[in-house]
Amino acid sequence: MTHAAKGKTVFVTGGARGIGLGIVKALAADGYNISFTYRSSGDEAARVRDELQANYPEQTIDCHEVDMSDRGQVDTFAGQIAETEGLYGLAYNAGGSYDTLAALVDQDRAEALFQLNFWALTRLAGAAARPLMRARAGRIIAIGSITAQMGVSGNSIYAASKGAMLSYIRTLAIEIARKGVTANYVSPGYVDTDLMAPYASYREKVEQQIPLRRFAQPEEVGALVSYLFSPLAGYITGAVIPIDGGTSAGLSIQV
Image 1 (cartoon, rainbow, N blue to C red):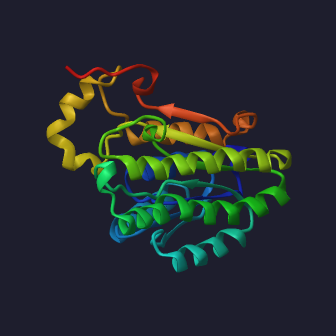
Image 2 (cartoon, rainbow, N blue to C red; image 1 turned 90 degrees about the vertical axis):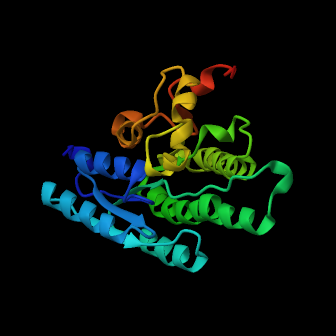
């Protein structure tokens, strides 16, 4: 536990598995009280909560079932965030995808994805920002995607929702900076999670297009978020931080 984290609470959405779990574990190890959400993986969430509570008995580890695609549930959870004593930050990781060609987009499915990836972020970040500004300290982090700044065939709506997250976070960052609160956008590439399972047959080919020739591990993303929550990251705000093995650094030519 770090002295700076003692008594402070951080909310993490989508924290029961994958990238979110990597973030939850890293921030718990730093000494924060953690409240994380899950949508359908209740048994996994309970195991994570119980394991972390046993490992860090002086901290509070909570989990909450929240469907970020449901506006009512998001509003209720936003109220809980706003009323939390010792609030120090939000890491928004919940999200989904919708793969289709740009010319074939179904508006209803696109709007549903924007609710999950974008509008829920704005609601929760807005709820967190006000008490953080009053306390003149805190962190807001959005887990986005390198697709927000790179064209990927079949990812138009997913990329657009992540791009909207990016624009929102950068504007939020300059609006809350004077109150000592930072906001940043973490931009992962391919990460080794269950979400990649449907693409297992393409993995080897994809890895050959990544300069480091491998997918990221959730723990690596968690470590980056941990640093952004630390006191030493207090001068980083409005930043887009890729963690993609070099994918966004150069032109990828498939042959």
